[in-house]
Length: 97
View 1 (tube, rainbow, N blue to C red):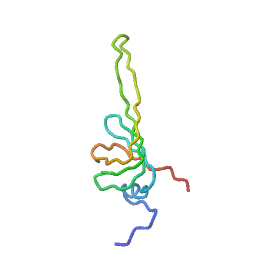
View 2 (cartoon, helix red, strand yellow):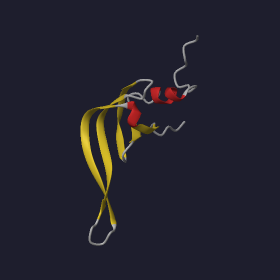
View 3 (cartoon, rainbow, N blue to C red):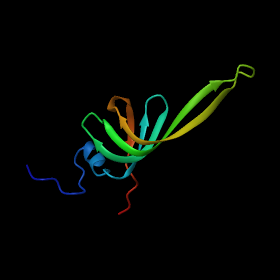
View 4 (spheres, helix red, strand yellow):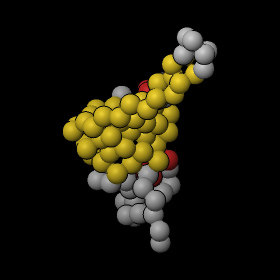
C-alpha cells in the first residue's frame, strides 16, 4: 500500500491525525468540553492533550423559585489523558486554504 500523502483525508481518523500538535475541541459525555493541544491518540479515541481548558456545565434547581440555574465551571489542566469511550465529538482547528 502506498504511503498516504501529507494532508489527505481518506478515513475519519485521518482528520485527527492532521490535528496532531494543534489545539482541538473535544465534547465529552456529562456536559464536559475540552480545548487543548493534541499530542497522541489511538483507534479508540483515547487521547493525550496538554494545556487543557475544561468547561463543565452544571444545572442546579433553585428550590425557592423552581428555576434551573446553569453554571459553567472552568479549570485549566497541564496534561490530560482522555478515555475514548467518553468522547462525543472532536473538532479540529479551522483550516483556511
